[in-house]
Figure 1 (cartoon, rainbow, N blue to C red):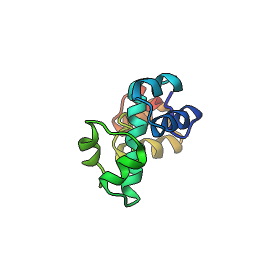
Figure 2 (figure 1 turned 90 degrees about the vertical axis):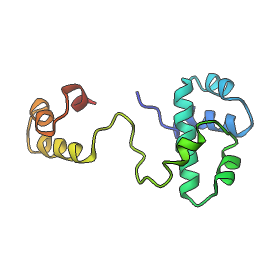
Figure 3 (figure 1 turned 30 degrees about the vertical axis):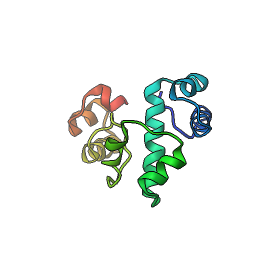
Length: 121
């Protein structure tokens, strides 16, 4: 299941970070994996930066700093926040066009060049 930062656990986690709790205690309190916490922090950081805040202002608003910030900063100008498991946008469009035209999952997957498991996802 793909948890969103707007979920109750996400809001609890981000509030805990904002209050100055450590990452470890915040993920434990929210009942999530550490990498999910990092993903939510990244999403929040990028949202703040895209709203026009400077790097320092975004860090302060987030209430957290990490060695991952330089890699997050490198993606500020990218237009999408697509999940890392999602396929190329053009392949996805081809899949949905084939599927919506009555194609089976297998035929639509084949038409778009993705695996069956990717098509299910």
